[in-house]
Image (cartoon, one colour):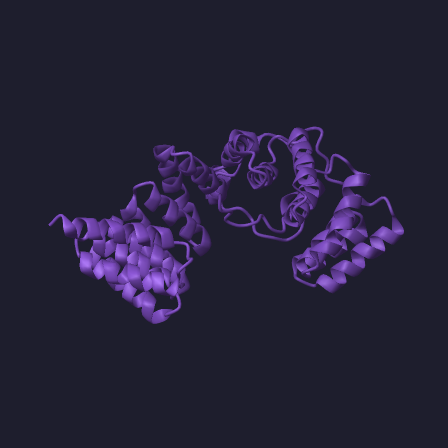
Length: 340
């Protein structure tokens, strides 16, 4: 299962009172009943000392050096200040030092075991290190403490997927979908799991729902388009990749190849071949183009040209990803030509 992207730095603006992006009225209306419920009684967000408040104000305007100094002063003043440790971890991540953020989150979580944001952020970094067992322990604790914590459910699902515990991942993704109705990631990742299990209709429905939620996320749209094409909705896949082209201005070779495959699946084979020609001009070293062209030409009945493309691929990639398939296609073409 291909992962789409990591859940990155999580700033808990609403809980901590930092300046940030205020949810739109539409986003607020989309909240589930669970989200609208009051915070779980066992979950705690520590109060901010004056020094911590000052540091958070600096952090909200991007003055990370001043913010770091304030949080470090707060820790000197009170070594039990879990919020200061947590905020210092956030600053260190924003400064591109996630390894240094880990002990700060660990200390925040140690001082206040019910501090679910600290558990979550620590788990994200441990997952990135490959420590899936500890990440899952932290995230499982976080969602027990606060079952309405959607980000933790999503991170838990990602960690289960990493460790190939797909049944558990599916359950966690389903919870995340309910709690994060505006986030396309849980919908898309769950759909890709279902697609791999041949649950095509369920996957297609989720990908169709994810598409409008991911309009400004090119990488997410690429994954959605690929899933839609494999789920049988090539027409929508082509439209989604059109959005990607608008966002990126120029499609990378692998995405051009995906577009060509989707165009062919949508019945526009000539357009598909033109896209492959564009791809070859853009990157002559992208050898898979010959395999894709051969496959499309063979489907169109242009066996001689298809055979040329397959042979060209095999010459350039004698041990490539499509070597065996190219050989099989050539054998089938030879059989068809003999039977004419």
